[in-house]
Length: 362
Image 1 (cartoon, rainbow, N blue to C red):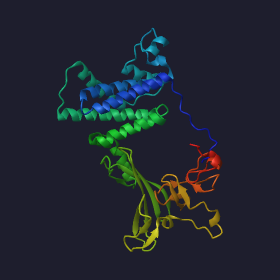
Image 2 (image 1 turned 180 degrees about the vertical axis):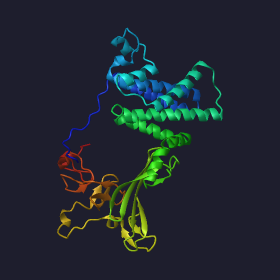
Image 3 (image 1 turned 90 degrees about the vertical axis):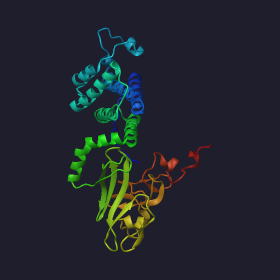
Image 4 (image 1 turned 120 degrees about the horizontal axis):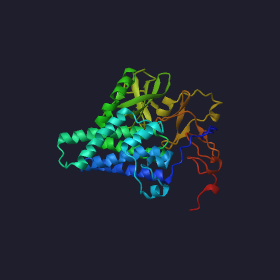
């Protein structure tokens, strides 16, 4: 439990009308995803509707009149939906001139391609899609999708936090893991970033989910000849897990530990064997200090007892390889673990039941 006196950032409270607007836009995004293969023409229309709605969210949050067009603007008419809404062009202009949040030109270009496609399928009969047409449609929508997601998850993060942000992330991940074409398109968009990352000497590997070579391994912690890395795919954003690079204590050969491996380590070169805990623990407590040491401690990430050891300046679970800067002590049982809930002196922690008075009678 962190006793941080700094004021935590509070996301702005959204009005019911803004929440309804967001939910409506999300519904059209969901519909566009579901229709992209079975009804591509309608997918274009649904997607463009979502773009138009989502661009109005920051404006409506600033003031409801910003999404209304015309001179006779009345609040009652707005609440009942009896008003003329601003166009895509007007939304972009107000975002730029009123909120000073201009939509990037590359994003506008991606949107405009979908807008023109939407106009064609709405105003002209266009039912047959060849393989080439489908690939073009997927490319257009993929580019616009990622551009819209970047706006919502980065530029407008304060509006799309919490559950909404998680929904956006899950939607994008689902789209990328189920559709290799979309995944390949996003890979092309981040190719330059991945190249720069590799030139810096970092490792990039292939994702086993979206099949793109976009997993970036970042160093989380190190101690002497042991380095802990955590991997995440920059295309589908799924975790690739954690791994520890180190040298065998006996023969000095390079070895690798992954999360949730065997309890004991055995060197593939010399056969040296040791428990993962003893292998990773870097503590050097004297006999008198052992009684007051916080380790071995419990890990709340994998619910393992006595698996967290000292590792350099922090602590490491020898089972799931999660690294912690600090450990917390339970106010009831005094056991150390990676996370202790508030009022633990009464309610206990993840490794004890707390006072009997805190038990649920049911």
